[in-house]
Length: 412
Ligand code: CTP
Image (cartoon, rainbow, N blue to C red):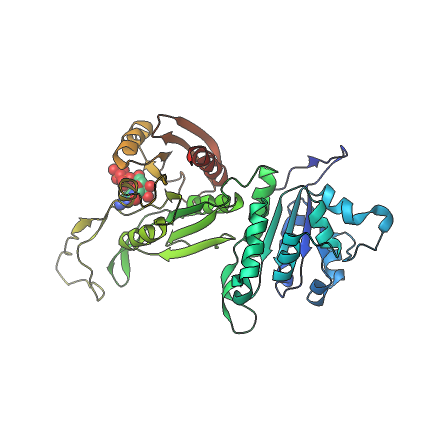
């Protein structure tokens, strides 16, 4: 979807203005894809690299892809006062990749080049996408700088875990540029509203559990995980620390989100228990199988000539949502459930809210071509306090943001 033109401070209308700051890390080459996505979706992007960034990707590339001149210092085109103007006119600044050095300068308000000057003059939301070796990310100096930037309301994305430069593997990897783009889009939509989930840890389950019958077969459901991923993406854009328990999904990891893969309902229960111990909010968006086969065949179940198949005996799975709501490890923890209903949607939803004991229940109607796997959703969010919030059909991110609005209003 193309970005909507906005009116800038001088009253001119135009495309949303994004400053892409690039500091000197190898992930600079991945920022080219972020730049493409931003420009192709209707944003006016000004790239401000540091001098070190140009060792990795040269000025002609940034200039050609953005359609704007590129400089690293404050001494070019001084009559246009770029060290002040670029930051002042921006609707969003995203620094990707942000090195440990750049984060340190930003945290301490240093301004020795065009990018750091821009960061001091920007009054719009600022997103940092750090990328560095694990040791640098975990160093107390970096950790304190990140905490300072977050305290000031900036969004510092948690780096991904994975292959780093060379043969190392660990935390510090630059997240998927497509996912950083999504986070920027969400942040632009929110404008200068505060990151109201900053300092909160949210745990979200997504996808659908699979209950194995034998090594090749399982009982499963049609949940794609898109609504849970939308919750994760929007929570990260609002500053939360996010743990996403992903049951059999095939979606890219949202930027800044800690993704834990799970398979069965029993595995999901364990993962929820572990993560919920430190969480402010638990959202059960996963479609959990209510039953699992009583017996698991270690070898593939074969047809027997002339014989009817053996019936499958099922046993109940734990109700993770009800358990979590009944046994909250932290006082004031909020628990949110989802209800997939095909008939008597609201009446069933109200009864389910009481039965499960959660604070909010997102009730949506499901069916062959509704909700599952689609990009849109429509729902009513029921509150244990009697509130009913209808959410009209729209992107799953919109429903997710309504859930976070209701959550933040209830968090003490
Ligand atoms: N849920 C859960 N554990 C289960 C089943 C469901 O935690 N064993 C959670 C889901 O993640 C969701 C909510 O409970 O947040 C409601 O799921 P739903 O399938 O609509 O309800 P069920 O409990 O399965 O009730 P019913 O089958 O009667 O509709």
